[in-house]
Length: 125
Image 1 (cartoon, one colour):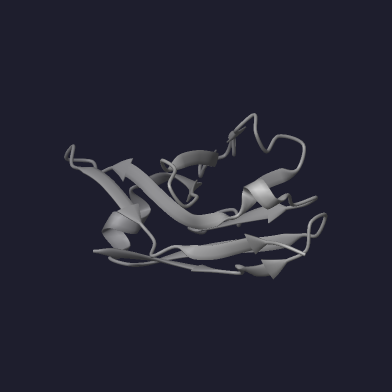
Image 2 (cartoon, helix red, strand yellow; image 1 turned 60 degrees about the horizontal axis):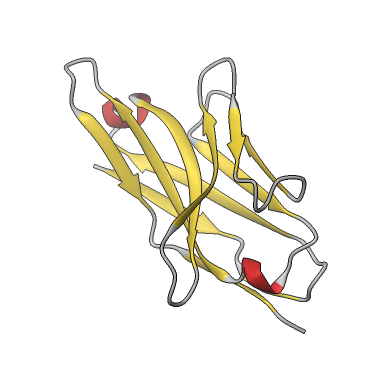
């Protein structure tokens, strides 16, 4: 199996910044089959929403939700299964539990989809 460990959440004032980290560990065969990682968030009473994704191949292609574009940046450690979410100019509406997600498929066609436990981000004065 694969475990995703998130860190970096906390309380920050509006306009502040936080950097979330997510590190994958566990089965080396399954970890090597992870091709994408990303961040989702879920605010109280709302559905979980996609925040940003990144491919782990050479391209490192990223996608960022319109709601955070220009403020959030996703990045990765090349060759590792570690991703970061740099969050700048945070707003109260960014308050949510942020979840790391990793997915891919093995050489034999098994679909992989792993989630972290989540880290709380609270934006408040």
